[in-house]
Image 1 (cartoon, rainbow, N blue to C red):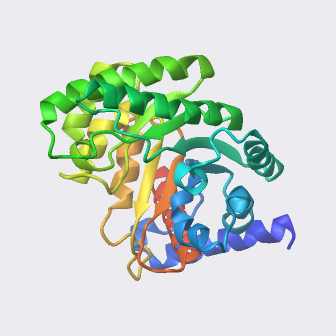
Image 2: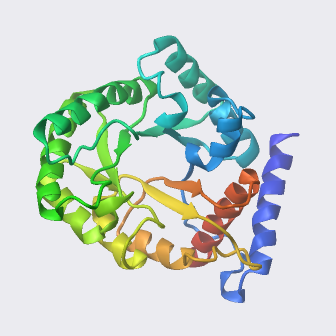
Length: 297
């Protein structure tokens, strides 16, 4: 398929979505603001875990099937490869050959950077070092970390521990040009006020606000975390007949992002029950394009 024809079909798909949206969302004219959209690897977790999609082909698929130019890796899918230079070299080459930017690595299962126990926290910090180095090798700007996943620990003590753990990891990452960014993920970190206090006190750490992972009001939560944002995660689960996300007001989220002055990538993270991950990714992409186009008119 020629590039011009692919662009035409992509534009037609977006226009088709807009025709199903409420009239105020229709794409009757192209808006001046276009979101920079990336793809989080978790969106394809079924295909990756089944072996249908190989990790090395992730960037290739992102460009070929979704016409996106940036990816966010998840360490779970290559957990034993952080220090495997030949593997990382191939991963980087596949992305480069596809014209795809490697933005960040989402790091899980390496210990809690907010552990109250100093030895456990220190071990968690050191466990992340190899992912900082891998991210730098791939040309990423950040690693995404999780903190305070266990809400049964005292929130104040964990807050203090989180500041210490994050500051220590950020100091290690700085010479590599890698930012440490925290997602509202589980436990206390889903409390946006709690997490914003941690980030403010840490001082040298950013956020990756996720549309869906808030214990309170998601829109207030986004407003609190966006001033620290060095990434944004557009969570999606299901879509109504108009193409809108069923549980998240994407138009309102886009307005909050614009008001905060955030100009970085917005990463698609489809987590729907529908086994057709490709369709969920495309629906999320097209919805982001639609709300941005409406807002830009």
